[in-house]
Amino acid sequence: MSTDKEVPYYMDPSFLRGLTQKRITRRTALQGAGAVSMAAFMAACGIGSKPAAVAHTNWVWDKATKAGVLDFANWPLYIDTLEVNGKTTYPTLDQFAKDTSIKVTYTEPILDNNSFFAKVAPLLAQGQSIGYDIIVVTNGIFLTDYQLKSWLTELDLTKLPNFTQYASPRLQARAFDPGNKFTIPWQSGFTGIGYNPNLTGREITSFNDLFDPKFKGKVGMFAENQDLGNLVLVGMGVKPENSTPKDWQAAADKLKKQRDDGIVRKYYDQSYIDALKTGQTAISMAWSGDIFQANLSAGNHDLKFVIPDEGGVIWTDNMAIPVGAAHPLDAITYMNWVYQPRVAATMAESIEYITPVPSAQTYITQDSAAATNAADKASLLELSTDPAIFPPQDTLAKTSYYRVLDPVETTVWNDIFNAVIIS
Image (cartoon, rainbow, N blue to C red; front, top):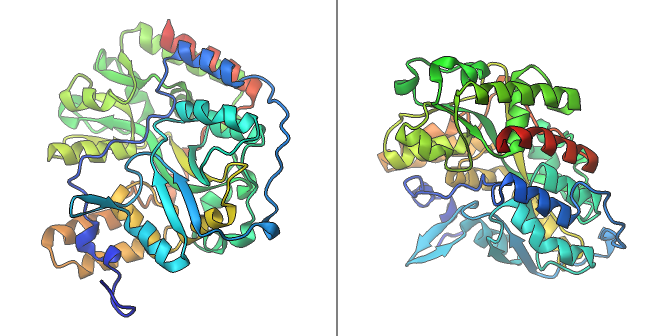
């Protein structure tokens, strides 16, 4: 164990390397149901209809007291882990408990946004606690619905000084949650293009490469219409946040032509990455973290990920405190604590998504310099300059968030883009 003057064990680079472990991606949002069953699901949960009035009120922060307990619900394999004597531990959560005397019960019940929403919506609608103090929700249809139904606790930003000081400026001005009223980011990633240059015969740089007849029958597109529609809008030069139903229809028409011309092999769920790895497709819509993991598991660098010249989509998973949470002060204490650059660096070294804390890069560089194992030193150095974790400003400048849809717009959007996928 460490003393106060030593580096805590969870910061030791020898404990941070999980890069050879195959990870289950958490980018499965909206894939748990097909497009037809999704429409039925949303109707059952009230998505696409006017939100029902609820009697909830947000916590009054000056009355909330520390309980010393935190119930945290997250996605699988989405936090730093360490295997000790055959037991999985969570180093940063252990450190948080030492720093704050708050014991964390950490579980991974969120397999996708839709099934988790279906599980908790009936309880929230009845004004009951869902048993979690922090949940992690992707920006998009379901996060908007939580907000519209007043099911999230309004945050007190005076209790989040680390977020204010260390969060990327981009993350402090998000269209889907202006002023960070209900959420702050957990991690982020990109939607762009994955490809195998051995099969494409050239480097891929443009969104229009997805529509090139040269790749007829070898192109993968997403069956999840949120990413599908937003990426095509960006590729057509339309900012999703400013788009209209007319723009959505134009994007759908472009996709229909691509489909009808036989360019698309298939509309994929998470299995798109397997199609790329096996050569069934040469080029595909892709999520940034998947390409890294695919190459890692294969022991090569055959696949590449690129944000097209026209731009890409950036998504964010967000921490939120559900209304009725039993331990809100403990929850917001953790939300603030995790924004320390040292902690954010430890997270980034393990889970390899875009960290919300740019200054974490300095600590990863320091960890690389301190590592005594050559492989650890090299992998940490690579991570410290990885644009998929620390994207440069020119990359961020050409990415857009998902279009924020109100309930009526959600129905229109789904009707337009499901017509591409389901026909």
